[in-house]
Length: 188
Image (cartoon, rainbow, N blue to C red):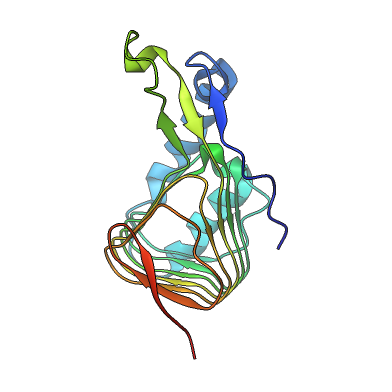
């Protein structure tokens, strides 16, 4: 999987995220998504997949459980045979790239944009955003209630323990846990 430049991007509060085009597109997407978001019968996984495919040709995972929220799906790529379980929240604004065969457990949050707060003389809401893509390579298992922050790469074959907060890159074939998440061993 190609990992693009991981440099963080600073955006003004009046840029793309709040543009009229993004707001209209997001309004249409969320209106359609709301019809299928909480329907739990397994058949509805395919309907959710269909709705996402209307807005992003880069989403190939057909297992998208009920309650999943994907913001800015046109900036998200999900490989084949990956799964998103109940209640996951993916903020795709800064870009999310999920490989093939990735298992994402219930209530995982992937965050790619935060408020900039570096200038204490200005209100935070006027300082724009700090964005960074999240890359999750192939064959990764992410436990329930994990929070993955912007600018992070999780290496191929890694396992992230439940409740972890991932703030730094995780090397391939690692087992990592905690807040902040740290590698405790390599996979044998």
